[in-house]
Image (tube, rainbow, N blue to C red; front, side, top):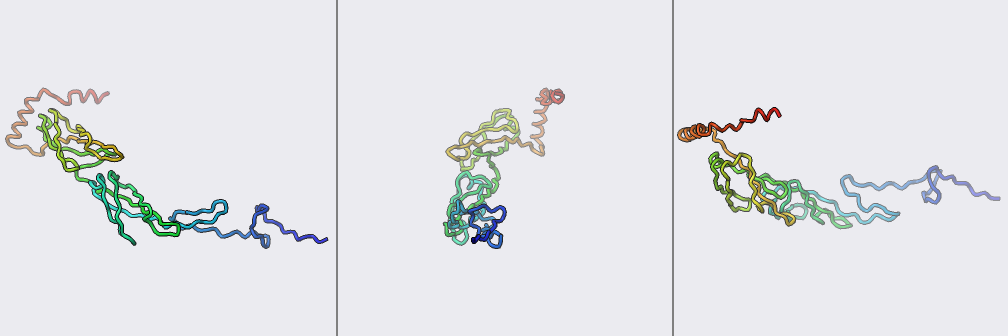
Length: 231
């Protein structure tokens, strides 16, 4: 009786797997390579074939002014094909904007463009989420006696804030609705009072301050400082 030649299966290879056994060894198909830094798309699922690969994603950077970051700005991006894009209002420094379909071309469609936005600092204003912040320099007499002081705003208007007599350095005033509008919410303008002390005082100003010192000699702002230090 003819006995068919026995073909041993290598260890670790399950029956029914079509591995083309030759010379007692399993021939594995070469692994597909993915380019470093490129999204790995179209993986095999259930033995299916890889679909068309999308084009590569591109990344660019732009720097805009603080004002443009608050109100939005249209910029021009130059490359193989120049085009304009809108930076949305209220964007933060370091934000990444996705421009769909503005990347490289591919059989499966174009990739995307990512734009990193840098915001140049403003000489007066900073921001905290939707609130605008600024320091308002005032004189010693304005802080001591009180005053109505004009304050510039980012949108170009000028508003007046009223200092109460005896306003201390570092006090924060809030102007409602003068901040950043984002996601249907508008923040406030927070004004920190910065009392300016003259570096040099001469003549009548010096005489006036000396008289002021004599008139307020009974007031000691450090009266309980030592006691509090022992708490």
